[in-house]
View 1 (cartoon, one colour):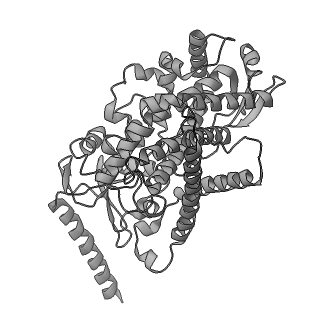
View 2 (view 1 turned 120 degrees about the vertical axis):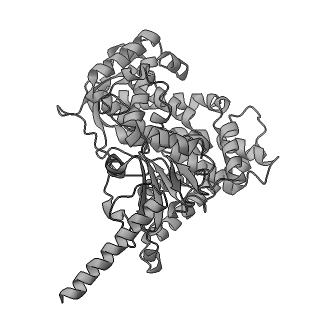
View 3 (view 1 turned 180 degrees about the vertical axis):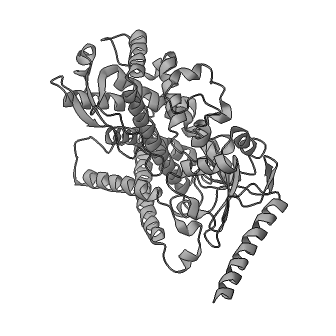
Length: 509
């Protein structure tokens, strides 16, 4: 009975040794041992994935080649390697891998997030940068953002009208504000906080909230079938069916909005009417119908809604959590606002943000420590290339570990400490600071996100005093999701600043 056992060990030893020698012979990046048949390195991965991959990189080097089941995956955890990926090899890595989420949530890989590099993607990015997210368009919609912040301030003030501290679930409050903000800019409608209208409006609101909840529930789910396809053959992929149902709901909802705006535009004679993003896209469709199909418009709306709400709300929640754990920094932020805007006279506006350097440092430090996506959205190589002297085969999925780079003690002094002051020396961090990605697949909504985050955070600091819920520090553990949320949603205490009571009392609900 011992001979078969020894023979089996010999077979496995020979297999792994041969694979290791071939790895070196082909000049591939280092790869942790062992890579098992079928599952590859999946047995090494634990949540949070960014920290696990960072630990592997510390042991084996900042350029790693793993196998997620059948997929070769390049892990990059250094600024120099990231720079090679997004400059010299930017076109090579401009594709997206074919994952289940892109098939269903990404309109069969046709949205700006999931489309592979080519004319279609270039057209989508042109639309985003010149028509939807241009500085001029964002400026035109600033009254919506200001109005939503005022509604938030009024809601908090009325909840604490006796002047005592109240507990606030900041995760839900900030999420609802950013969703309302995005939907008003996209389609002129808000779905949270308004008093219910007729049955039709109530049903539309119900469908919207259901769609959003399911999107964030399923969008962050890992599909093991993307890496071990054999599981799909045996019908073990229940996520596939759920995503199909979800996408049908999303498409139906967005198409109804498009049809409604199309009818309104056809019957609208007032040319001075405020134009939403949907109105702009429908007007452009008249001249370029092949570029602005309903499917393209729907895809843009869905990406804007999800990408522009959860990331901004999450960053504000992380920022406020860090400020509550560092009340001296919170105090400095308030005094800067008070010095620039004054007290009792007016609420802060977007035009003030450029005059608040310390607040901007707080936001950048938050994005450094807690980037919305610890791992940048995956890329895929369209042809063989070289990174760090290693050969990278065609069809390799690329994961850039932004969290590892931005929290590397060799790059950042005391990276675990919240130090906004560090940004006086680090404004040219370049590839050491990449929360919005870089290159052809960099986030086109960075400018809008910074305005939403800046105005929201500055406003709650200006108008309210904040304290932690209890004596203990705010828990900063990361959870899982479409982006990287807090594992425990932030619950904080606030009360109106005395100097702001008169202004707050004039705000409508």
